[in-house]
Image 1 (cartoon, rainbow, N blue to C red):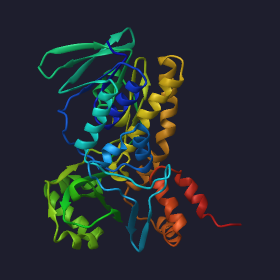
Image 2: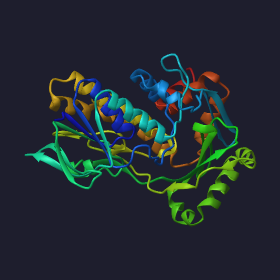
Image 3: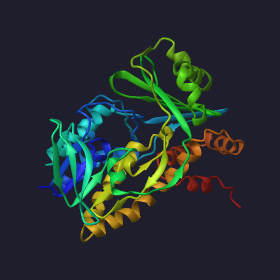
Image 4: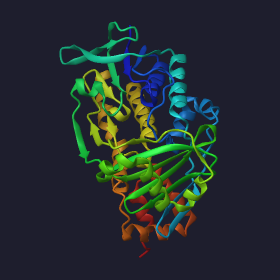
Length: 388
């Protein structure tokens, strides 16, 4: 009945299903959670991800949720304060950070409108094999019965702990230790933009989202997790107080609107992108520390790449080989830069570089383009080299 089964209907799986359904594939999407549920997320969509939403025709639905456009960014560390516009892509500078229960539902609805069959409350527990080739899935439906569905391609978009990756035998590589742990919550009544603050060993991120609320996240080195988890609320407040004291003053009259969320399980790895009859997109195939907020954007980029490979290559095996060959080139530069930043070190050499950047609007914009994944950080360093 289906050409493609996508396991997972969050931003990676739903966008994959949308693109493949529009390309004429018969697509089944299986999601374990109920429709409209929230999840841990930094929410932020970098400019390349926003450009893809516009190209796919769903950006208007995202902006209609009321999440504010973010057109400037600030970054403060030690005596350095960078403030400038977000980089331009396709004539626009706005980024967005919609709540995930809204974004994921928009993408699911768009996939369904394109012809995909979307089923929530379905838990995949096994793969169907045809020799050494994946040929479908077995899952427990919402009513509790076990269902078998077959397809030429199974796409795992089921997150960092991907069932599909485990069952398919996808190997992990470029594995690095966990670097940070993070806690965040939402605040109302605080004036804020897209803001980042750092001191040695700590980081604070500020991201405005829907309903005039602001996500504020506090990051710590991973080795502190066992201590912090027992006093998370106090550690969260102390981090903001020490890292972003001006922000802490703004919060004195603000209201915390949700409980404190946290995680110490921020893994850093790549997994084999594809194999006979299967592929991985989003966190299932690659996960890194959330400090740089690249997860949603790179989920979109991987979905777009997989769809492009299927459209261009003569046959599914050639398409999956092309996806496997090209995906790491898409991800590795930002993977390495995230690992560097997530160590939370404030090195004097880096501060010297940032001090030069802050006095140049052009270099500040280039720096934010690098953090958005639009240019290689090495190109920024080249810009800073003295003319000989």
